[in-house]
Image 1 (cartoon, one colour):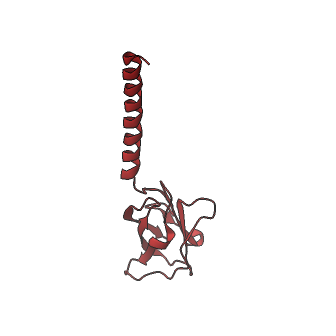
Image 2 (cartoon, one colour):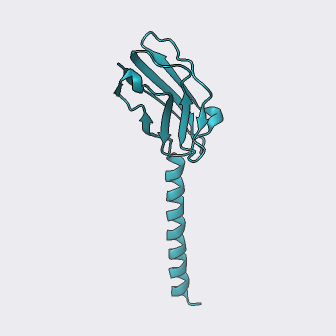
Amino acid sequence: MSLNTLKTSWGKLSAIAVLFLGMSYQQALAHAHLKSQLPAEGAAIEQAQAPKVITLDFSEGIELAFSKIKVTNSDGKEITVGKLSLDPVNNTKLLLPLESDLAEGNYLVNWNVVSVDGHKTKGSYQFSVK
């Protein structure tokens, strides 16, 4: 193998290594971001159509054991909910069943999640029932 061939091979190998390290670094910085939610942020829902389940869809898989969702009404009273679960088909979706019908009013959804890569994120949003 000539010296030029060896230099070219090392150059290509170095470029590939830098590319993979850069990709790994970007993935390491990733967090689970809320992509969508049901009911939607700011939604004004008719009482007859009030949700039975809060659904949060994230940008990456969620660790159920380290995640929680809390729903409170405008008086700050926590709404009675069922057991938080992951969508059986998609581990990016958290499902929180509501155990009773929602009365008219404003509701705040607070969430704290840990993604499968171990990063913690949190947030909140509001919706109303009219």
